[in-house]
Image (tube, rainbow, N blue to C red; front, side):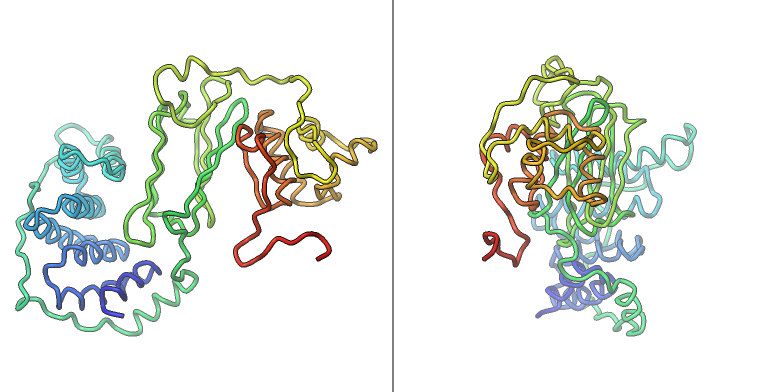
Length: 393
């Protein structure tokens, strides 16, 4: 494995000091490789060395412009803006992100970092020195030549080992790859609940921007780039001041407070007419029809089953027994408790979807999209490395 590959592996694993070391060696052999400077800038930034991160980003900008590679120019300028933000040069960050946006990029990261810098400047009085811009689009830096590049002295081994021990829980693949990151959502009369399923999201480098009309999420991933999730505009207006988010080890949980207590048919609006078709959430419903099912006991009344979970204990009848025999309903069962809590706040379609998908998949799938799961039985999807087999085989 060459130095660049080692640097990429170290960056993905979260060993940023080692990544700097390996990319430094790679640059000594290819001093005009734009991507190496961008990746080393990323590694420097994640170690907190924003000045070195800025220097590498500026060299990358100049090299990318010499090569005329628009995509690399944008990547390098974004790294430069992030480094400026890390150095507390918020006006420079805003100025640079505006330049990037004028060049026509669709990268959501630019807008997020611009907003973060503007928020830092907003409390300051007019005329504050912090508003002074000290940079230009093309940085004034000297591009290293093959002769001038020096192989950095190997980093202190103890320091590297300490960092690796401190981050020992992070390994290659600990973060969810970009193509495996998924999102799901459900709702009740008052809130929209969005979950972005991604492991190992770094809390201190994640931006969740909740506005009344939009939601933007950005966080770094193992490849060294950023993953962006955007809903702009949202299906309907929310109250950003009463919305919130939480980052846990396996996902990002976002709670959006509805302004109008009505049902959303989707998360993102496709036009101004969407809000005019908001459907009021009903507390009553007609008897539910039977839908395709793979259950051994035949079709279920998913409305009734969902209601049973949100009500207190009652005398068991033959019908209720048959409705629940595919679901683990032992007293004190944590899964059952989870469902009761979840269903208590969910709308009718969400309740039916979750019950049908969970039961028919034998507990291996959970969906909140009734329009999708009502069409056919939900297949069993066992975890990776396992195989679904009929009972008793």
